[in-house]
Image 1 (cartoon, rainbow, N blue to C red):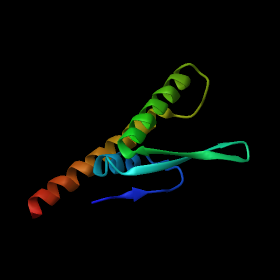
Image 2: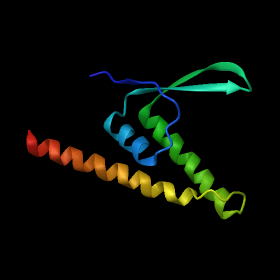
Image 3: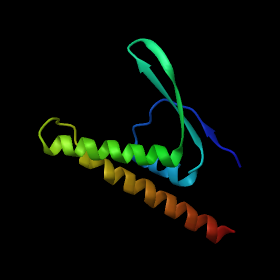
Image 4: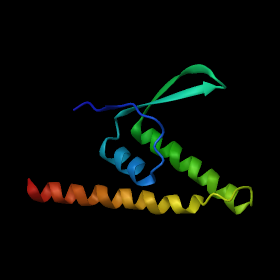
Length: 98
């Protein structure tokens, strides 16, 4: 089954994590812009997107600890954990129904 996704940036850690676990080979389109000028598209797998998202969250957490931002980057792993929990629950329910 081929799944293709194209959407604006998703800011829900649970959704990002669930999607990457459920559809690891799905291709995500990421648009890069430079100012108002369109620059181009980068196509990556959902799994790669999750890894990049985790790296950005780690950077945000380091910035929070260093006092550079007031954004609570430490709340995002909890949302990602919820995405993992829902993914495991759905897999377990699907295995029991089949």
